[in-house]
Image 1 (cartoon, helix red, strand yellow):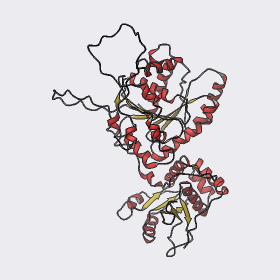
Image 2 (cartoon, rainbow, N blue to C red; image 1 turned 90 degrees about the vertical axis):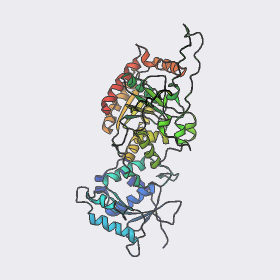
Image 3 (spheres, rainbow, N blue to C red; image 1 turned 60 degrees about the vertical axis):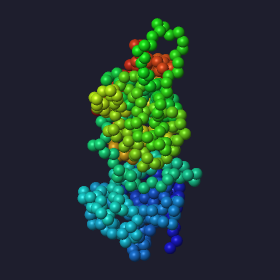
Image 4 (cartoon, rainbow, N blue to C red; image 1 turned 45 degrees about the vertical axis):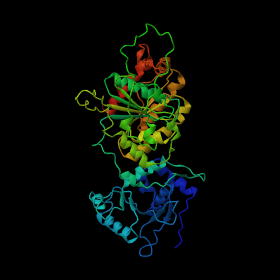
Length: 486
């Protein structure tokens, strides 16, 4: 029998897109009939990069006994997965264990292709245990909450296909939704990701100064640079060995020389070498601060900002690995004393590149808290929805709690900024992205500090008593610690 793939119209698009933009099980149950729900799932998998065949009228033995077959575009003749749609009242009794066993039997009879039983309701508590038994590895149960996560991830991972529809660049099934990030085997560090798709809003400055503020409180800090511009890295040159016989000049008579570069960078981790992150942690000139440095080659291996759930989840696990610790100082070769025990970091602060990229996505996937700096101007505010969508997308991927907050930077006391601030306070609170109370003002001491750090000096923005930015970043850091429960 010839395969007839489902074709979707712009009428379908206008009807179904609201369920991506604001996923709601109650709305699906109210607005979609069981037949409509089947077509909506077809549109969902079409958006997720698949070709979709409706086989709901072809019952066994002539058909597979399910509602939809999905195919990878690269292999359009071989069924990749089978889908059974159950639009049930979310407040009702839901699917029974007998339904799950019957679906498993259908998959076996239809050729043992992986299958997804998708419902707007829930499954009985023992259904997943039964589905995990030997011989039922092809059975995947997607309840209402998991369906919402999948919709959110697909929505934030699609690109325009040139025909008026948005689709992921590679086919994405919801199987990765069952790979939860374990809390029991993760680093105790709080992971803070500083992210915004727009450049020039102070991401690197914020990551750097939050790191300095935390270190001044005695916290052990790892700063992770995932931006190929490596601005954060340039402000954190390596600690150089001290020559006890060198004489220190009374005054600086020559311009400071260029600082030493880090020998290894995080590019090694993402290249073919796949060097583990703990081997790439580098010391800096500053007490309590270590860095995973970047270099310009990181931009050259950027794989793109579309959906790559396996790689995104992998990095989230790697950054949460308990083995990512403060490097131990090797013991003296003559001494028999063992190396001191490794200490975990208290905070891991991640700087990200502008625009939606693979590196910004993986940083958000690993985050316990997403800190979004932005300027109070019309262009920055217009792009804030993209930043908020990115955080929602990656939280849907991991299923882990993620705190969120927006921070106004480069602040000036002018009417236009006050008006924007007032509107943002209302809008973002409703979205669950509260603004930080502190405002980071424009302060020339920030640029003076950057000049000092990049040229190998030690003076950061907290080195000036009169620095209004330093005062603001201290308040931001204190508020951040309260929000993450540190």
